[in-house]
Structures are given as C-alpha cells and as structure tokens.
Image 1 (tube, rainbow, N blue to C red):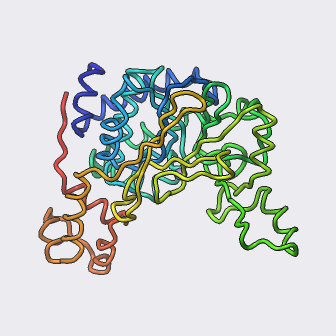
Image 2: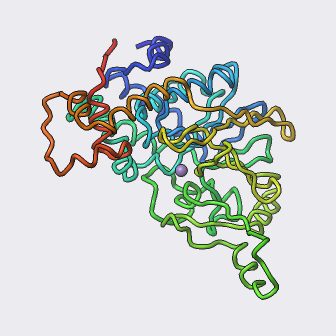
Amino acid sequence: MELDKCLELLYRGQLLPEVTVRALCFKLKEMLVRESNVVHISTPVTVVGDIHGQFHDLMEIFHIGGPAPDTNYLFLGDYVDRGLYSVETIILLVALKLRYPRRIHLLRGNHESRQITQSYGFYTECLNKYGDGSKVWHHLTDLFDYLVLCCIIDDELFCVHGGLSPNVQTIDQIKIIDRFREIPHDGAMADLVWSDPEELNTDSIGHREEFYRESSQQFQVSPRGAGYTFGRCVVEKFLHTNDMSRIYRAHQLCNEGYQVYFDGLVTTVWSAPNYCYRCGNKASILELYSTNEFYFNVFEEAPENKLLNDNVNLLVTNSKAIADYFDDNVSEPPQQENAETDIFSDAYQARSASSRRVEYFL
Ligand SMILES: [Mn+2]
C-alpha cells in the first residue's frame, strides 16, 4: 500500500491490514537499525511527551502544533498502553516516521516493551482489534527493540524518556549500549526509560538533615521498582561532563502539562490530557524555536474524549447497560463483573475494543 494512502486512512483512525502493518514495521526496522542510540537533530522542533494510546489527543497535537512535515516532531516515548487507541496511535507514528524520516523522531519509552504491554492494555487491544491469531503485537513489539534511546538537540539539549542512570556518565556510554533487545530490568538502558528527577523540598530541610540533603541529590532507589530517582547534583554533573545545558524528558503525569525541576535544568513534558480519561490534567507540547526560545503549548483533552467519557460514565453506572452494550455473545464469569467498572482493567479494554467495529482497507 502507498504510504500516503496509509497515512490518509490512519489519520481517520482506521486500521490497516495486518500484512501492511508487518511491511511498515519491517521497513522502519531497516531504517532504524542504521541509527545510533543517540540521534542528533536541530531546532526548530516540537517535543511531545507521553501519549498512551489517546489517539484523539494526538490529532489535537497536530492541530495545535502544526501538521507533519510542516512541524518537526520529537516524540519522547510511551505511545501505547492505558488509552483505548494504542494500535491506531503507534501505527500512525510508524507511518509518519517512514514518510518523513528527518522530520519525525521517535524515542523508546518504558511502555515500548513486551513485558509492560502485556499488563497495561496494548497486547489485549491488538488481539481484540486484529483477532487472536494475529501477529500485530509481535510485529510492533519487535519494532520497539529498534527505537532509539536519546536525542540531542542543537548539541546541548539532552532528551530521553525517563532520565539519568548511575551507569551513564557520558553520552558515549549511551552510544555503546546494545539497544536491540527487550528493555532489561536494570542497567543503563532500563534507567534511561524508567528514572525520574526528584526535587528536594527545601522547606522541610534543617541543619540536622544535611546528611539527607546530600544523599537525596544523588541516585536513590525508585519507588517504581525500576530505574532511579536523581537529584540536582547528578543533573549538574551530567550536563557539565557532556557540555550540555538542559534535559527534557517525559514519563511523569503533570497536572499543568509540564513541570520544571532544578531551576529549569530538567523539564518534564506530558502530552496526555485527562490521562486515562479520568485524571483531569492538562497536557503540553514544547515548541523549541531555538536553544533558548521555547513555548509550552498547553492543551486540554480532545472533544472526542468527552464523548468517550460520557459513554464510559453511562456504562459504569449501569451494569445492565454494560451487558446490553457489550452484547456480543461473550459470556463472562460473574466474578469478573466488578472488573468492568474499572475502565483501566484489561477486561474493560478488551470488551470496549471488541465492541468497536474493525474496518480493514487495502
Ligand atoms: Mn513512561
């Protein structure tokens, strides 16, 4: 299928046939295998944080940020899981990367992983939209192994999904990681996609807590169970060692759409408004015009999500309605009835996905 024809269908939120998805993934792997773990790009570029399958909000991003390829985009990862349209979201981004390889850049997030996607919705969504026998999830998760880990803008802005690692002092150490694999549980590659900055709460610090202050600025075990939290000292040392000025990353929900740490040395960009259709947060994209000129373009959820919410609310408040709505001859054991009121459960996502009509186009 012609790439432009694919894009036309994908922009409308339609699914491509499995054979086309396989071909797109194969082509993109061919392209990405030649890329370094760390790609270098220049401003102007618009930086996008987590999307998590919120396809309508991705459309909103192109609306407010400008369409590709008129606007250059750097996506910081976490395209899949949580939202209801991970498949549509990731395949559109794959096609855009193939069509405009120098204007679209896709980093790997911690959710671009076989293990994580089996727990947070993407695996189930693939099976529900393409059928139990389909290999779409395999094609896409195999592709994830090829995504690059970091990006450097104008030789001084370091971009990564999560953050820094005690195993990484220099950019060259990132460049020698063997990234063509599942995200490991620990080590440099895991830390880059899992870690978080942690700002010291100066209000609560007294002289007796000097020891705490010192240690909290170093790497600490992360409450996430993977990666580390890291403080200002770690950031300053990394930036100085590598002659860079700032770090941009995603990976953490921000109520205002972005969050600035350490007087601007680290910034989180979050691009999933009303995350999971219930968090009520704003989202942003970061428009970088040059190294020191930028604008956080803050936005709220797409109107289509509101309709989705209304449906979800209606459904979760009326179990009879759920039964009728999902009247698709799938009998569920009664003990699972509670699961469907949690719209984030795999059971709910599976039923929701299977209730939508899947259309195939050649
Ligand atoms: Mn993440």
